[in-house]
Image 1: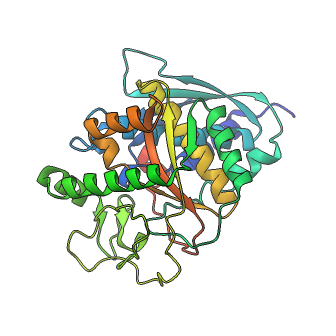
Image 2: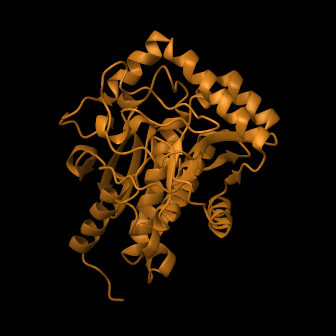
Image 3: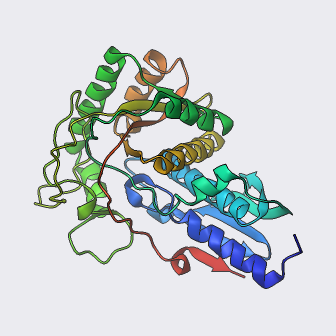
Length: 330
C-alpha cells in the first residue's frame, strides 16, 4: 500500500471522528469532543455534558467516551491503518482521555469490516423484545469480544439473579423518579416530538405504551408526564431477552474507558446479527446498590453496565451532532 498524502490522512481522521460520534452515550448526551492536529486524534471529555447529579464521578461519561474510542479504532482499521492508541496519556490533562494515530498500513479483516458497517446502524432499544431466541453461539462470541478488550460480559443464567436485577432496577427507578434534581437533569436530555436538537433522547425512540415483560426491567421516564413516544405496535415486545452484566476487575477511570470499548464491540457485533440492546443503569448510579450487586452477583468485580439483548423489529432513527460541532482541527 503506497504512502498516503497529508490530505488523505486528514480525510481518514475526519472519517474516524465521524464514526466516533455514532457511539452510544448515557441519555445520548454525546459527552465528547475531538481535536485533530497533524496525524493525531485527541479524544476529550466534554464536562458541560456531564450528568452532575446522576453521574458525579463521570463513570458513565467515560464509558460513553470509551465506546467512541472503539469506533475510532475500528474506522482506522477499516480504512487501512493499525491504530496507535494511548489512553489517559497526560495526568495533568484529565479531560484528555486518549490520543490515536494511524500506524502501519494494514488490510482490514472480515470481522473489522463487519463491525464497522454497523457503526451507524446500531440503535439503543427501550422496550421488550420478541420471543425469538438469541443463539448461544452468539452469546459466547460476545463474551469473547468483551474479554478481548479487558472486561467481562456475563450472560445471567439464574432466574433468581435475573429477578434480583429486575427488582433492583425497578426500585432504583422508583427512588430516582422522586428525586427532583435527578428528574430535572433527565428532562434536560428528553426531546419533545419534532425537536430539531441533535442530542438527547428523541420522543420517537421509545414506545408511548410499552408492554411489561416478566420479569420487568424499568425504563427511564423520558416523557415525564407528556403523551410522548412512538405508537409502533408493541404486540411482539413481550420478552425480557437475555440479561447480561458487563464488569471490570478495577474501577478506575481507565477501567471505565475499557468498559466502554468492550461494550461497543459487543453492541456492534450484536447489531451485525440482528440483535439490539436495552440499557439499565439506574441501580449503578446509586453507590450502595452498585456495591450490593458487586458483592452479591458480580463475583467482587465492578458492574459497569446492566443490559438486555434480544431481537426486535423496531428500526428507530438515530440523532447525532454534526462533526463540525465536536471537532477542532489545527
